[in-house]
Image 1 (cartoon, each protein chain N blue to C red):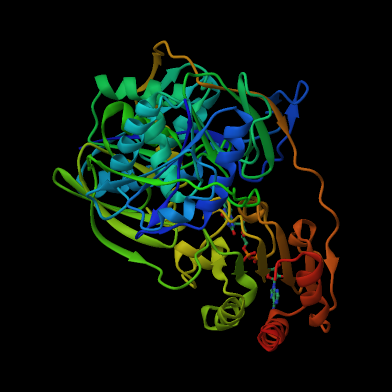
Image 2 (image 1 turned 60 degrees about the vertical axis):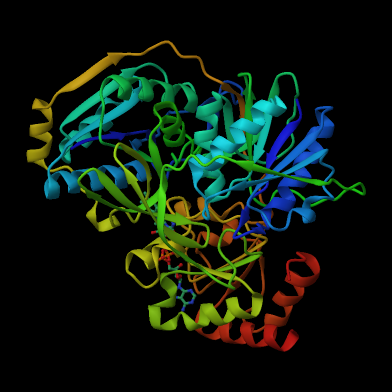
Length: 248
Length: 314
Ligand SMILES: Cc1cc2nc3c(=O)[nH]c(=O)nc-3n(C[C@H](O)[C@H](O)[C@H](O)COP(=O)(O)OP(=O)(O)OC[C@H]3O[C@@H](n4cnc5c(N)ncnc54)[C@H](O)[C@@H]3O)c2cc1C
């Protein structure tokens, strides 16, 4: 089985978010970039499948060379090959377009992409790939079992779960649940050494034009200070919630 | 050329967010000087949408009993083509986000999720949406031929119109890619996605045996229950209750956080809620900085009293 994991490279969850040049661009200064958490859960499941049922795991990133250390980390924790499509990731449409084009000439049985990246929170790349390549797609996937040429996936819905079955090739939108937090891997020395020997391809991008363009960023308005209510005056809290905030 | 809006239903019943979405759709149609077409699929309550100013209200019958994303997206593509719609409006529910990417791919459309307002400019269309997990907003211009707007949850008031729209029933083809083999749906209880109030517990509650305190408070408020990430990682509560940056997003009217310190990743996922109440023994807990109201106190003393007083009130 051939698995492709699409990786996005995002600011670490503790990053302070700032903008520069009149709030036109995200300020990367001092920001540490990591594998998008939802993608990492998917990658870890892919490596688990490789070890349990046998598979090759390729990781793919659309973007510039600044993401190479993140791809090397993926190799160090068990991926077999890294591919970077060399073009700025202008918007979700372009990213999905590039990945779709790659998949069409390099078929995979299973494609994994995070349900959402924690930077632009778009939640759209896996669905777009599914449409472009006419693949079955399960989003918010929290359980995945492969049996021959078909897959059984559990999808987390608003207020419930459903089990869906689909034939391979399949694309899933990954998130926590697919593996547990404690299953996530930290690269060890051996893995890091091995990663140096693994194939790392930088491939040219096809022509693709974005459908959206960010013109500026804004920060939310600063918040008023919290109103503290003494622990022995619950009535006051209820009164505030009812008459001031009007939420009861 | 009309604006196409997809109003979601579940087991035939309209989802709560559909009314807000339709209100947005009408305001958008007015702003863009065009008409609004509302589409539902397998909905049994379409008449409830008659007051939202749509010039057309289409209920599609699809021969599939569950939300099958590919079938739903294909059906909307057909309608978008026949209506020659340039703008499509969907919600930010898990189902809508599941389908939205497929829809955008099929229509080769530009798509923006978590949109919080009406467009600020029309030619070209510019929308404001939340990014960086609620830490910022971006103003994004849609530069393609067809645009999809994914409206964030709980961002505007519902408004109805006096005129009423008649419902057209149409059949639609199925294009099933995934077959549902089983489903478990919370019945008769509020869910994190559509509850007006969410009561959330953290590590400060010490163990799963104490969750009765959270559930009792949630019961009197008709609230959904949620938890911080470590609480679900330790197995005190199911993963489906984990909220935050890597869990479910929360955008409710009232979010009550009990024994949760307010780590940046937790706040990122719940900050879109309108009013936040924090109960924590530690006056230095970072959550107080993001809260509207707070009690510095012990959850084990505060919660039973709060629950009791609310019960007495109702
Ligand atoms: C990549 C990444 C992603 C993450 N994503 C998320 C996420 O999506 N959601 C999330 O929640 N976390 C997330 N986290 C974890 C986050 O950093 C915190 O560790 C977590 O939110 C802390 O949970 P907590 O507040 O329940 O526990 P703690 O931080 O341990 O806080 C417990 C709080 O309870 C208070 N307390 C103790 N006893 C009582 C009492 N008797 N009454 C009242 N209060 C009491 C304490 O004062 C303390 O403030 C993420 C972390 C990382 C690294």
